[in-house]
Image 1 (spheres, rainbow, N blue to C red):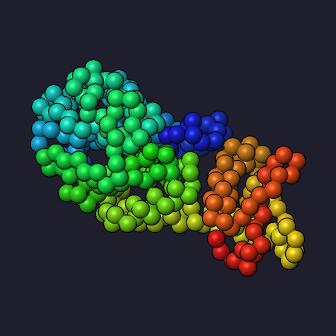
Image 2 (image 1 turned 60 degrees about the vertical axis):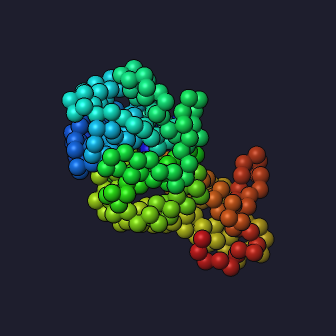
Image 3 (image 1 turned 60 degrees about the horizontal axis):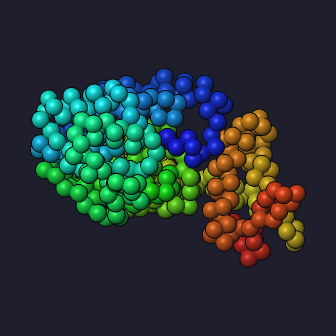
Length: 313
């Protein structure tokens, strides 16, 4: 949701729509005790793609807490979290980053300024210099919080989710949000990660954007269905488009979009629908179901002969 540099969604096209959507989102307190072991500190960076802003969380019940994400470096977030640490006499034992995007990592310098010892407590999958690695299934502990890292790439190549064992809750990062749907850079990996998250059987979710997810299994199921439905639409268009032809019949991504959705404004197709359609096509190609040919320097996609009899993706 926050990875503007990694997506082709055009802010200008969606700005009015996203602002309208954000205007009806519930207000979230700057600092709130969600349970007796989870405190949410808002990143103070609301925006069209960040919903109410980036959620950061302190976990545990003792004086030493685990911090999940750090916002994007807004001074008010730094003021709020350092005030909280001082007022409650808390320290941070681990700083766990869900992924590399700036609205999750930007607050690290402020934490180090507050306490230079925190520089040696930053963990990330595929870490940057000076950071410590997070491995799949790695466990982090502090008083009142046992946190297991779950590798869930797709939204970002290094994306991690975190399972809080004491609450049977999953910190979903940007993979599953409190409102709407997320975006991804690798649809195949993302779809696999949704199933991995589903397999954790967590009751609730704490997303990196939006409200607490009270029924996480239902929401993950919705996410999976949403992606599968879009994929099936494109697959069906490829099958129906070729008709009874015995030869190779190929289509560009734009042609497939028009076959599925009818005629739409060119900007909407190019900036919003085409990137996701191309992701679906690459996923189908990686699964060996389709291939492409270059026609006039552009990719045109077709169903492989061995898959022509297939009716679903």
